[in-house]
Amino acid sequence: MHRYAHPVFSCKEALDWERRQLIGGEAAEWAAMQRAGRGVARAILRDAAEAGGLRPAARLLVLAGKGHNGGDALLAARALLAARPQATVTVAAAFGERAFRPLAARAWRELLAAAPDRVETVGARALRDRVAAEEEWDLCLDGILGLQFRLPLPADLANLLATLNEHRSFGLRVAVDLPTGVGAENAPVAFRADFTYATGIVKEPVLRAAAAPSVGRLRYLDLGFFDAAEPSLVHQHALTADVLDPLRELRPAGCDKRTFGHLLIVAGSCAMPGAALMATLAALRSGVGLVTAVVPESVAAAFAARAPEAMWVPASETPEGSLALENLTALRPHLERATALLVGPGLGRERETQALIQGLLALAACPVVLDADALQPQVVETLGVKSARPVVITPHLGEFARLRGSNTAGPVENAELVDFAMARNVTAILKGPVSRLTDGHSVWHSLFGGPVLARGGSGDVLAGLVAGRLATGGEDGPLVRVAQGLVWHGLAADRLARHQGATSAVTTDLLAHLAPTLNESAHEP
Image 1 (cartoon, helix red, strand yellow):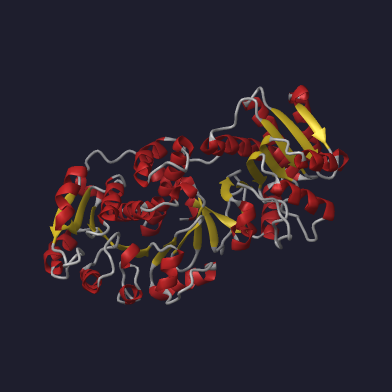
Image 2: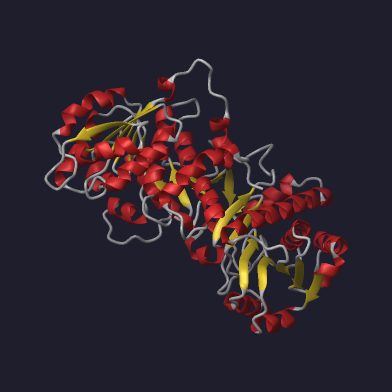
C-alpha cells in the first residue's frame, strides 16, 4: 500500500524531511522550488476549469512572503503568465521586497525578467486600500507563510488577511502549501482559500477539522521527496493517483469473464430503487467480470432493460416493498459463486430486511461491502471479530455516529476511526470532503473529489466501485483494491466538475468519467 501513498507529517517532521532530501543545498532547493511553482500553476489551471477557467487576460494577485512559499508563488505566477500571454500580475511582498531570502529573490527577478511589462508591485497598505475599493482579480495566490509559521501573527498581517477574506471580487483563492495563519497552532485569522496545494508533503495541520474553512479543498503535489525512501512507522498517508496504475495495465491474453471475479449485489426497495441501479452501473464499470444484482421483483425487468450487462435476480418483497427474509434460501447458490458481496444501497430499514442482511452475512464466506441501510449497529455486531474475510464499511459521518450509538454526527478523530475499525475487524471508508480509509492500523486520506459529490447517489456509486474492485481479486490485496475504488471515484468526480461544473451535474454523470480518468495521466502535477 505504501507505494501508492505518501506520509502525512507534522510541520516539524516535514521541515526535517525536506532538509534531508535537499542535500544538494541551494541548487537542490531551487530545483524543488521550480517543480513546486510549475505544479501549483498547472493545478490552478486545471482546477479553475470547474469555475469556467482562467480567462486569457486574467488579473492575478500574488501575496509573497520572505521564503520558500513566496518563491513558489512567484514561480507559479511566472508559469501562469506564460500560459496566459495577456494576463497581468500584481505582487504584494508582505514584508517588502528587501526581505526576500535568496531563492525567493531569485524567483522575483525571474518573474520580472520574463514579463516586465505585465508585473506590478504594491505595498501591503496600498493593497488594503485597493481591496477595500473592490478592485477585481481573477486569482489571489497566498504564498506568505508556510512551514515555519509561529504564533503570534503580526497585527498588520492579520488585518490584511481579514481584509482579503472579506473581499468578494476574487475569482479563485489559492494557498501554497498551507494557508497563511494555519500551522502547528492556528492564528485567530487565517487566509481563506478555495484550494490549498500541499507541495511535496501533506502537513498534518491542513487535515484538521479546525483548519477546514481556511484550507478549502486540499490537493497534494508530489515533488519527488519520497522517490528514494520513505520513513517507517508513519500512521497517516495521502493516497496518490498511482494506486490506479494496475488498472491501466494490459489484461492477460488467456483471460475470460471468470478471471475478474463475480460480484453479488443485494440492494434496493420500492421506495429507493435507484440506489441499487446506481451501485450496479458503477460495479459494471469497475473491471469486475460478472455482476449479479438481487433487487425487488417489481423493478427487476426495468433495470434489466437499463443495464443488460448485469444478471438481475427478482426477489420477493415485503408488503412495504423491501426485500423479504424468504429470499435467503434462494440466494445461497449466488453467494457460493460470488467473489464479493455488496449489501445495503436502498434496502430500507424494515426489521425483516435487516434480518435478511444478517442471514446473508452469516452465510457469506467472500469479502463483503456494507453500505447505507446495512450500516446498522446490530448488523456490524453480527460480523464477529475473528472473521478472516475482508469486511468493508462505507459510512458518512451520520452513519458512523449511528454505528457508535451516538445521536450526534460530529468530527471524528483519526484515533477514534482506527479504534473502531480495529475493534470490529473491518476496513472503513469514512466519507467526507476528505474521505479516510483505515484498516484499523493506519489512515489513508483521499484528497480527490469535491462538492460535486454532495448529492444523493454518490455513495451508491462509490459502493459499487469499491465492491467491484474487491471482487476482482489480485496480487495487491483487498486494501489496495478498496483504495482503488475510493480514488477512482474521487478522480472521476474531479473530472466531471471540470467538464460540467458542480451545480448542474447529476450523480450518474460520474459513470461517463470513469474510463477517461484511467486514460489520462495518473500523476498529479
